[in-house]
Amino acid sequence: MPKRHSAGMEIRHLRYFVAAVEQGSLQSAAQRLNVAQPALSRRIRDLEATLGCELFQRSSRGIVPTRAGYAFYTDAHAMLDMLNRSAQRTRRLGLQQDREVRFGIAHGTPRKYAFLGAAMGQFATDNPEVGIAFTRGSSYALVGELDEGALDMALLYERRADTGRLGERLIHQEHYVLAVHPANPLARSGPVELSELVGRALVWLARTDLPDNLNPLLLQLRRHGLEPTIGHLADSPEEQLDVAVASAGICLTPASTMLAVSDGQLDYRPLPWLGTKLDLALAWSGDTLSPAGVRLLGEVHTAIDRHQAAIASGKADWASLDGHSLIDLPD
Image (cartoon, rainbow, N blue to C red; front, side, top):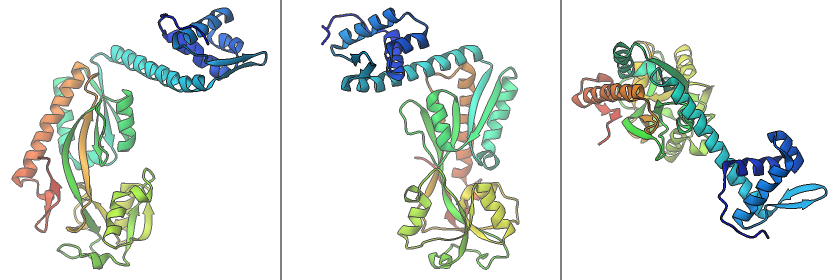
C-alpha cells in the first residue's frame, strides 16, 4: 500500500483517475487527455498516496479498479460533473450579465393566471434592454433545470421544489372540480355526489410522469372506494378538455381550468369530498440571480400579492363554486 503523505488532491488528479478507469488503460487514458503517460501514471500514484490506498490492480493486461477504486470513481465522477455544471453556469451568467432572465412555465399555467402576464408586462416596460427567455415543460422537468442552473425561476404546478438550494413561495392550493359538457346528464348545479360518478366514463389524464401508485388523484378516488371508469385517455390537459367538449363528456380537472376554457363550453361542479389539492408555487435560484433576475422576481412577487388579495377579498369569483371554496391561500 502506498505510504500516506500530505500532498493535496487536485482536479487534474480526479480527471486522470476517471479517464484511467473509463479507458481501462493508462496509455489510452493519456492519449484521451493528450498528456504523457509517465506524467499521468505519476499523478495517479500521487492520488493513491494521498488517499492511503491502491486504486488499481496493475498487470501486463492493463489496470482494473480495486474495490476502493470503484467506490472513489463514483464520487470523483460526480464531483467532476458538478464542477463542469458550475463552470457552465458561471460562464453563462457572465455572458448574459443583465441581458436575459430565464423563466420556466408549467404546462397550462399562462392561460389561467393573469397575474403572470401583468408581471412580465411591467418588467418589460421598466427594463426594455432585458429579454425574458421562456421554457415550457412539466414541473418535474423545470425543477431539474432550476437545480442545474439552466433556469432562473419557474412557475410550478403540483410539484414543489423540495430543495434547500432554491427559494420558493406557495401561491395557492386549488381543488379539483368536475368539468361537464352542458349536454351531459351530469350537467346540473350543486356538488357532485360520489355515487354519481360510479360507472360514468371519464376523460382521464394520463400521467406518464407518475405511476398509478403515486398519482394523488387516483389514490384519493380509490380511498373513497371509486375505481374510475376511463372512457378516453388523454395525453395532455389540453387534449382532456378538447375531448370532453367534443364528446359531451366529463373529466376531473383543477379549478383553474375555468379560467382557460371559453364560457359555455363546459359547466363545473364542486367535489367537496375529494381532498386532493394542487399546489401553485414560484421557485427561483436565489444564489445565482442576476440584478435583472432580482428585479423580475420582485415584479412577480408583487403580482402574486395582488392575486392573493383578490382571492382573499372575494373579488376572484372563480375561487368558489356553489358556496364551496376552490382555492386555499397559505397561512
